[in-house]
Amino acid sequence: MNSGNHTVVQAQDLQALIDALRQRGYEVLGPTVQDGAIVYDTIEAIDELPIGWTDEQEGGTYRLKRRDDQAFFGYTLSPQSWKRFLHPPRRQLWSATRNGTANQVVFKQDIAAQPRYAFFGMRSCELQAVAIQHTVFTQGPFVDPHFKHLHDNAFRIAVQCGQAGNTCFCVSMKTGPRAIDGFDLALTEFIDSERHCFLVEVGSQRGAELLNEVPYTWASEQDIRAAHEITDRTSRLMGRSMPSNLKEFLYTNVNHPRWDEIATRCLACCNCTTVCPTCFCGTTEDVTDITGEQTERWLRWDSCFTTEFSYIHGGSVRASVRGRYRQWMTHKLAAWIDQFGTSGCVGCGRCIVWCPVGIDITAEIAAMRASDDISVEISALNMV
Image 1 (cartoon, rainbow, N blue to C red):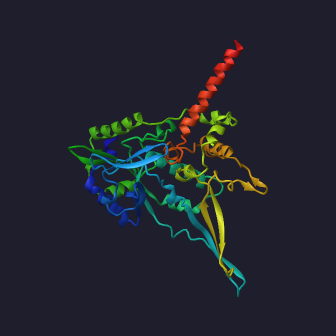
Image 2: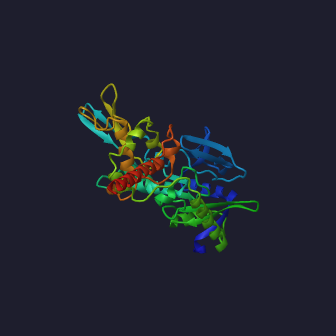
């Protein structure tokens, strides 16, 4: 523990942090309460944060309720993820205009006009999700310039998790609950009868420069230990878990009968891929005006749960719900590792919460493993 890298900021002084970011030209995005949910949106003042609110999350269930205190970040996770700002649901890739007189076509791709975002209130699993998408979009032979521009210019303020949702399993995915890198500043909220303040950890030079514009005091060793105790307690309260060696297990169980059972419940509604902070699949649409002089190409989110996603001449490659669900889970938890060197799951549990029928990927993996164990036992008995 290095106390020289930690300070304490009083709750009311977080406004100075937001003001300093806005003065630097950032659009500050943070959690707010809208339509009965925690929603990430533009904020200008700390009273727009979800002060005094928490959430209850379970398979197919999400509810907000009041807390007994005035915590700024006393909730678990928003239904949304930060990917909608870095990898928007729909955006223009380019436009083209035909000059009939000169018989020329002029293409335009405007990247410089993108905003500079400051993400205020990122959880550890969300930081890891952004890092995973960064690998997907920028580390291969084809770089997404839009994502790269937004990612490289974003300011990240993390908030350490003070509570675990019943659907969280970040510990077993090694993505939380404590953020250890990928941020400019990281906050741990202390709130009790004596104080309401934040331990602030500096993660970058620009984070240190911004902190100089905010009133603070140096943190004590006791403050730092207390912050670690908060995330240690959160680790022990995880509502779900995943086993290790998922890649090998899924690769050897592509024909497991459990896939058929899941398919009887799955609606193929795409909710899981929409709320997932790492899913990146998309499709393109070309739009031309009636004169034929102007055309645009748009990228929009797509999902491996739609029959059109894998459609080729003659039909869909994965026509059954069984095949599509198996593709999603096996790709995310296994093939992703071969492609990108990391799992595509950060253990946030959003896919469990926002599945209309409450399908739980941790429970499905457990059920497959349990039936395998039973099969092994039966085989052993038959050999006796």
